[in-house]
Length: 310
Ligand code: VAH
Image (cartoon, rainbow, N blue to C red):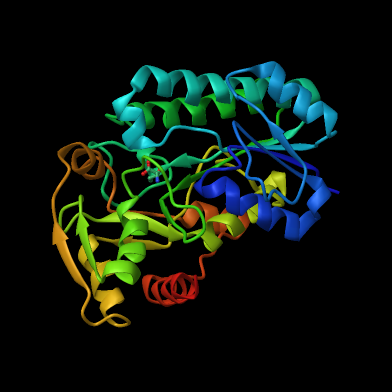
């Protein structure tokens, strides 16, 4: 039976991952952890600062977990605003979590990102194995993190696995400090104000994915036969390649009067332009059966229906 410690459990991915894992493995077998917790927390939870290795170790030991899913990190735009803090949290926190996984012989997941690619990476059908020279601190953290996770696998035998997430779109916990956050904000604003001003320019394509697909990918990868895994850290996965106008066109199918305007943020626009337009997911499909179920049409219908119910 799986017993999992999730770091960053109050974040955009972590908050939904904990509830999805609890449905799959039982509430008592999934321990959330973060710098703070919500009053309505239903299951086991620990206050953990991932820059303190002892705090991670004690939480893992106390609950006798067999798996760590390490999500605590600073996203791209926030990392660009505070690069030293990003290095300390994203790399120091990852090293601490990997050390605990090594000492307690735990299975280990942490996400990489399309942010690991840079302006010299092929932009269309970006291969699994290709040039990775990111020009952001977040990208440097993600490439270094992939290599560090591979090192812990080859040197210590830690069963590390990861995916390169595209921009994730969710309606439960809004993201904070990412470049792709516009693709979440646009839905909230469409329902509230029937209008959105995008900080990303028209025609700027990025990979995106609906959160249910992102969470299913973690479970599928972590349960995959280890003998089939070649790329481990970390797999390209994507579901949607879209620019702001594509989201607006889909939203207008449900809210005809929706208006999209632009006020481009040069920092986040430059980050977005350094990332691919569409990555190739074939290695994940071949090695562990990755599949996405939501295209932009199905995702838009679902997220608007859920947001209108709130
Ligand atoms: C970010 N949402 O924007 C994250 C993600 C691919 C983007 O890594 O930083």
